[in-house]
Image 1 (cartoon, one colour):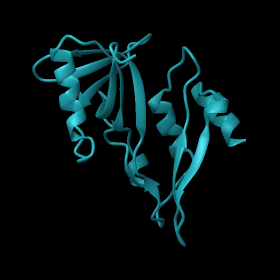
Image 2 (cartoon, one colour; image 1 turned 135 degrees about the vertical axis):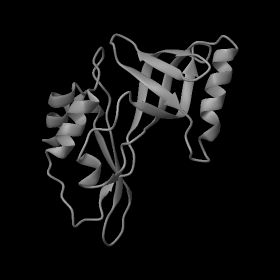
Image 3 (tube, helix red, strand yellow; image 1 turned 180 degrees about the vertical axis):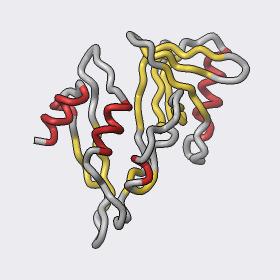
Length: 160
């Protein structure tokens, strides 16, 4: 039932919704929910936030959201100050930023180097800034716009 509801609300391919338990403990488990937009559709992050808020997750729990990881497809343009991914087929865009996670710190610098070499960056994966915390604090307000992706990986046209 949840698979169908997710697909109906967010233009998500119902066959792509996967819930995976990552760790088990006596109290709280850590898990991941993965899904993919239907071809030609975008997932509205404001609606996603609203839907999670509607679950009415309240205080008194140690549960929360560790991160929201996205992969966005489009064109990256950069100037001296910032790099922006303009999402294909929409007016949506993301500001790209360096991840503070040691395992992914270099990804943003590598992306900037690829752009400096004239490569076209067409896909960026990373964690959305501001999408983490305990319930209900993380749900009280929408994360600020423009949305920032803390880059963990990217692809160029040469890699495809």
